[in-house]
Image (cartoon, rainbow, N blue to C red; front, side):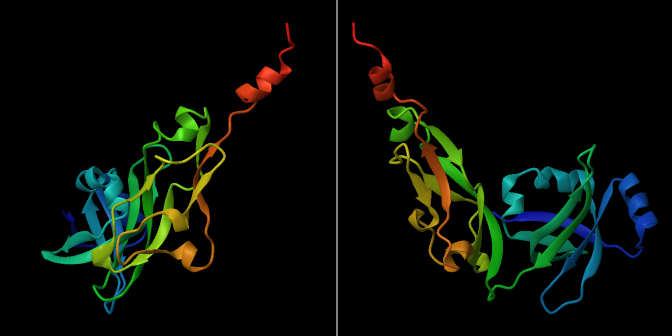
Length: 202
């Protein structure tokens, strides 16, 4: 299901105008890309933040309804207030149905509790990467990528090349020859065998 956000064109610009918008409960922003000029926009902060706080908002094709006309966009940048955690500014990029896009997609780690390296090995899971840059057409963009730890042993890692991706999607990092580790299970410090060796015989 597409996430829909509503905006209107913003005629007034500048620091003072943006400050007044924020005081009035709006968020200044811009939409750019494609074969169209960049357009300054404003959005209702309350409505925007309701969607912004969801993970899918950051890695999905969004439907931006600008003055009644919908177009497909991606969230590209935003600024948050350092104290109040409100959205100060937001940027969207138009996407084409026929051109590949690069988007950071989050990993969802599953079966951590049954991983042999944890369950029987007593190891600790280390999330080396929590997201990855993927390349795909807009229609193929996943909300997340699942990483299954059901067979991961202590002292071992899962690399990008070992993760099964949906059709039409590739890891940008892997395409450039970097088969980086995504998650690992570290062996416990001082295993039971070592402890037994250190215990003097009766």
